[in-house]
Amino acid sequence: MTHRPRPAFTVVELLVVIAIIGVLIGLLLPAVQAARESARRTACTNNLRQVGIALHHFHDHARAFPSGWSGMPSASADDEYDEPGWGWAARLLPQLETGALHDRVDFRTPVFVSNGSDVHRGTRETVIPTFLCPSDLPGPTESARVFDVGAEDGHDEDGHDHEHEEDDHAAHPVDGGDLATLCRAAKSNYVGMFGWARSLDDEPAVGDGIFFRNSRIALKDIVDGSSKTILLGERSARLGGSVWAGVIHGAESARARIVGVGDHAPNSDGHHFDDFSSRHPGGAVFVRADASTRFLSESMDEDVFHALCTRAGGEVIPSEP
Image (cartoon, rainbow, N blue to C red; front, side, top):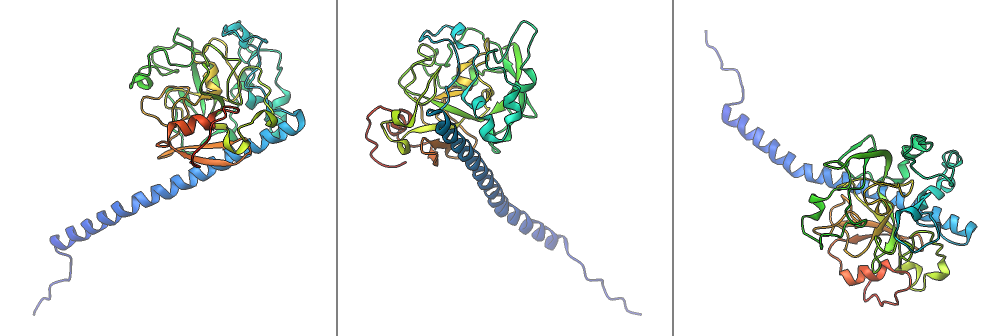
């Protein structure tokens, strides 16, 4: 009797097939990741557009955009003037279909009270999906979109006390590390535009953008043009958490957690916490005062970015970024 050999792959053929599959996976994986990031960026853009439209609804009713945060009527940088501290996003809750949460807020009482009667804890820790970028990663102390807020340790409010060291973002996070925990708060990835030529640390009530302490900026005040002025932008949680509730008295970089400073282009090397940033490759999403959304490149000209950050700077933007 004769025995015919059973057909089978040789070791060489099997290795060739595995190599081909590996090459195909290597080619497809970046495309899949790019498609997923594109979907996440679209969702982020839609979130910002909703917030921009909500701000216009608020403007139609109040004849001005909400204050960056509420405080005593003084240009002083003293922390005592920042309370009660409720921010622009907290005023938008009815326009974002979270009116029940808005009704729980006593805007006369601070966002955080350290004497044990923390009446706004549940409100402050409520996660609002509209304020979140799907591309962002958890911050240093974040869990389920709620994070431990770092207590103030003496650094300057806006994080610029080290003369723009290249590694400042790694050396000085605002949550975790050596910082004690002050309280917990829900995360937000969207912060208002304070401007860029004024100091958030020294002049919190005189920003040259749209949002600052007790601001009441209307469209008529944006003389540079609503389509040429940034209203809001992104902030990643790489260095710590931003919040929607408002200024948390006693927190590290408390004001910078609800507004951003535009002295650097988005995602700049050596960026500070108060800069605008995102996990999107190449830049960040912004909404302008006309409620239009744009993705601004991290390599854009810094002078052009500065011009977009002010409401009445009189700058001429040479080209549309």
